[in-house]
Image (cartoon, rainbow, N blue to C red):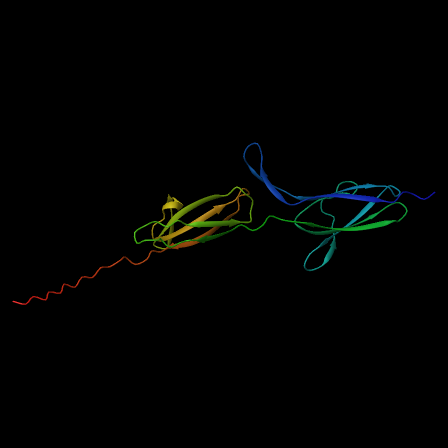
Length: 193
């Protein structure tokens, strides 16, 4: 009597972050959860972690049967072996948190003396984001005054962006303006007396 085919279903979760009831930040490991049926129990799982340098056995945080692991970002291989020595192999990619970045554009005012309408492009990290604009005075960041990004006049600023996981990035910005309009008048009198 032949045993049923071994079936392995998986659920993966990427690395993430969150806040607890007290508002404190915490990080959540990624996970690979296996649901194994068929074949001949008991099952054994041999895990490998693939890095740029090598493939090494992974014995980080498996559960008692080794079917579920909690991991950092990376690539993981598993070979599932049943009691008869039948095997199935799988590979899983667990994503980490994307790097937070900010790009600033539209940093020139339309007219001399006006404020700029700065445009931000924030990517990566974990939304929502907070943005704080500070002025730069004597090559030092002045954190005593936060500027409104809709009314940035010519000068030097730094924007500090913080994501929901508490990661920050900054971008230095110089707001420029066109030269003022100058009128020159030459009075020419052609009077014949």
